[in-house]
Image 1 (spheres, one colour):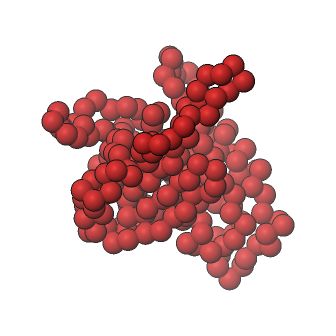
Image 2 (image 1 turned 60 degrees about the vertical axis):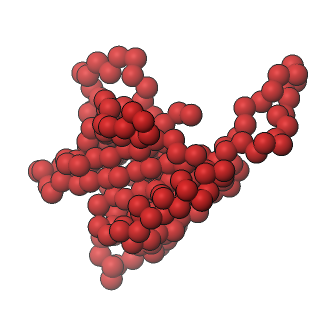
Length: 212
C-alpha cells in the first residue's frame, strides 16, 4: 500500500585542518589522513515536520543530536559560512521532494532518488548521486499501555526481517558496480520517542554523508 510522500533536506559541513596540524606517520613513515569531524543538518518530514536536526559527529565519540525550528536552518547555515568558515567547510547538500512510502506485511519502505545541489559559482541542481531506501519494522509492542521489557526486545529478529526485505528488493536487479552503503539503525533500549528519533537521525546522517 502506498502512503503519503515524504521530503528530506540534508547539508553536511566538515571541520577544517588546523594550520599548525602535524600529520601522524604510519609504520612506513607515510602521513596518515586527517581524521575529520562533521556537522550534519537534517530535516526529514517523517521524523519531524517543523524541526531541523543538527548532528555533531566527533572523530571518536557518538554523535550528539539537537534540533531547532526548521525556519532557523538557513540562518544557521549562514552563520557557519560567514562567521565560522575557518572552522567548518561545506561538503554537499542533498534533498528529496517526493519520496515514496510503501507498507507491506510488517515492513515500511521509504524510497527516493536523491538530488544534489552544487553551490558556489557553478550553483544549480546536478545529477542524482543515487537512490536511498529505508526499511523499518516495529520492535516490541505498538501499544503504549503494553510495554515490552527491554530484555525481551528481539533486535536480532527485527534486523533479520529488514535484511530479508532488502534482499527481496535487490533480487533480480542488476546494480552493477554502484556503491551500496548499508547502515543499520543502532538498537535503542528505551521507549523514549526522542531517543529513538536521535538514533534515526544518526542513521540517516551516516547514510547521506558522501565520501570526502
